[in-house]
Amino acid sequence: MKFSKSSIQFRSLKPPIFKINHFSSSQTQTNQLDNVGPMASLLKTRSVVRFRGPDTIKFLQGLLTNDIRKFHEPVGDEKSSLVTPNLPASSARSLYAAMLTPQGRFLYDMFLYEPPRSDEKLDPSGSRPGTEPKQDEVELLADVDSSVLDELVDTLKKLRSKVDIENVGESLCCWQRYGVDLHKRQPSSSSLEDPESASVGWGGAIDPTGSSSSQGNSNGWQWHKDPRLDCLGFRGIFPSNTTPPMVEANTETEEENYLLWRLEKGVAEGPIEIPKGEAIPLEYNLAGLNAISFEKGCYIGQELIARSHHRGVIRKRLLPLRFLDQSGKEVVQKVAPSSEVMGMKSGKKVGTVTTAVGSRGLGLIRLEEAFKGSGNLVVKGEEEEDVKVEVVRPEWWPREWFLEHQQAAR
Image (cartoon, rainbow, N blue to C red):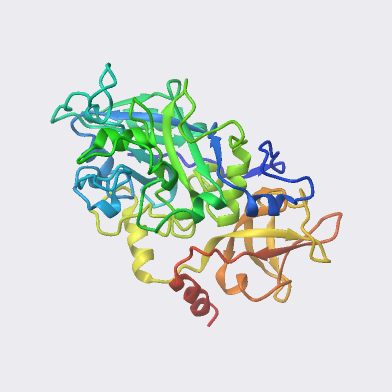
């Protein structure tokens, strides 16, 4: 299978416009997100693809970086993405994964969900669970970037398989629920339930329908904890003609606010922020974002990923950035994507800005230079003065990643 290598695109947006009523007029852009309660955004940059057929798991298992077999393998309660605590062991309900070129470069990312089964929905009367699903009924929904939707569907349809692949973006849409308060209320890193919705439902003994209703509605649509990081909140696919549960008028906000929330955590998403055909997945931290299984069998592009992983040292990584003037104040719209980041002492290029939103951004930076101290990095200005670049140390990074930059500096 051959994939075309497309040109790199970078994302640059104006500072987000805050339209929810949690903020005072005196708060800065940064403080607004630091103090905001739960927000929810309709993700217009994402769309939905449906995979259906007996070979769905096998088909995706050979294409994607994560272990898709988890959708059919029983897991314990601590990994269940449903809510009621008395729910029996079930298979995974959401995964994050990527599709690569044969050379191991990034192509597409996707969030995979097992849609609500018929026995997890209410019957037409609304008084009891629906019918048992068919044994050979296999269906998965994928939340994908809208800019590559048609290309992705066309590419997958060219592969021979017993899988029906359909663009269902007109009838289904993607949402994200996030915010400081929501993150703080999560009971533990291993729990996949939404604490705010845990008290809603039917209760009882074994109650998948009640569990479904507590996170979704009578059609069984659910919020799932974001499979990448706890601090990113909850994500889900919902019918386009309805507003998801837990979303109120005063908490719905523009998608750009979710983008800023992600950037501050150092998380890229989609083939614009993770350059299609160019990006090395481990440099963009996809292993730390639970997108890669190193235990599964072969998939397209695995060789480079395995070799880089077992070598043990990643010299460049994607990092959150702040853009400052010479006095240390944040500056807005002074840095463009693809700008080179220079080391003040060495005078050499140490990285590239990949995404810029207001005073924040993401950059692929050499680790030996990233943490040398304040004032070490700049973006050279052509007509105006240089802009200082401050690297933000992500709280979620594994400890060994910080050891890598010490090894790289030797």
